[in-house]
Length: 118
Length: 114
Image (cartoon, rainbow over all chains, first blue to last red; front, side, top):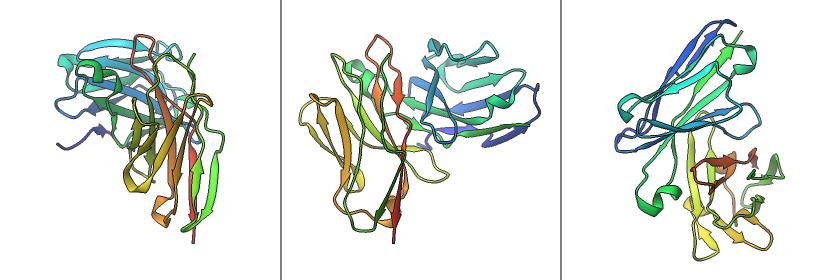
């Protein structure tokens, strides 16, 4: 078990460019979450998947953001036409959903992908 | 909408002194609460969680938290802190509206002074 891994760890881009982040969850975990964290704030929910199905997407997420989890394994988060306000740490987390405990399982976080938009 | 409130953005404390980090949650039929810690340049790690049962929950590294339904609080405590406890601490609650989002507070930065 190598934990949740995210790539790249750091990304610097110019305004208007597209960026894509990848998350590899713990292998047997069927739930995968994306959060965004800015300085001095807690993680802000973006979206989450149960296997390959995207079950919820935050209303704060503009249509420039899209996430996928093909085959229910790794996930990608793409930001199109980046803006300076997109600069943040993007966190991925996974958990194992199994029965009642499914809703109360521990989230395992990756170390995050830091995006800087110039 | 459910929300988690952490009233203190920063808490400085001397080494070996006790500390309490405050957290208030949104009242709900079912309440599931967590404390996570984030060390510099690391991902968030679970400290402890409350799902049901005993209102006093013990976690890793000597931390504990008490679930108080009447005050809708879940304060984190440690009787004697170490320099290594310097980190950001986040309180979180799971939404119970049919989806399983984890809602986080804004965090409390604990700085342990020598």
